[in-house]
Image 1 (tube, rainbow, N blue to C red):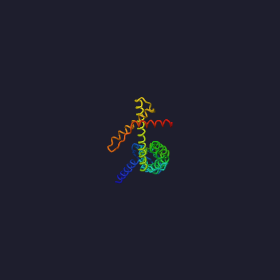
Image 2: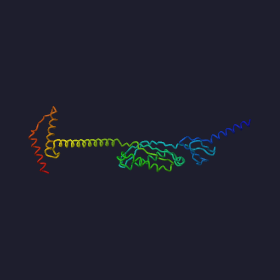
Image 3: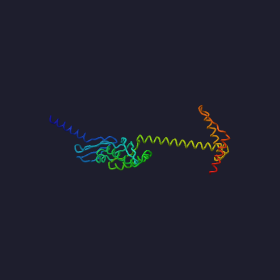
Length: 261
């Protein structure tokens, strides 16, 4: 009877030893093995053997690329404007041993480093520059973060600025500025179109655009158009100027202009 018990115990011990000595690591992952509390080696994906009771796998993590989505952060620009910046970081582990032993929590450490570096970088730019140079800011962040985390056994692959949000009062001011710029451009376009139209008219009349005859023609045309618009209103009193008097007034103005020049 004791022989059967001994055989069963032996089988259990052997089974436990075999089971404890085999460790399967999934694809895209690595594991850290310690022997008697000290780091011994890094095991790769696949079937791995360890010494029972002496060695153990203390940590397994992926070496694939992963994403760290940083919550929108308050920052201050060089010209003291408060901005909310939303960024995304892409990174991966290169050396699992460093990522585990050099830092307490690698992802939290990277997140804190991103926040510090982001605030520092935004503080070097004025508000308008941050809105128009997100690509440059992203590249600067990538360079600084990759350098700062090099000893952690990780690789910062890329940094993307998702959005930069100014305060409401600044956004409203920017909208007014854009509207004013749009109106200015519309006026310039209209003026250029009018100038081109006048030049074509002068060509059609076979007159020089700067000649006195053409200027008289334009004034007379403006007079006729103005009277035409006034006549369309039912409540307007229309007083027509004598064309002869108008012509004399125009000639007088032209003469004064020439004498002054």
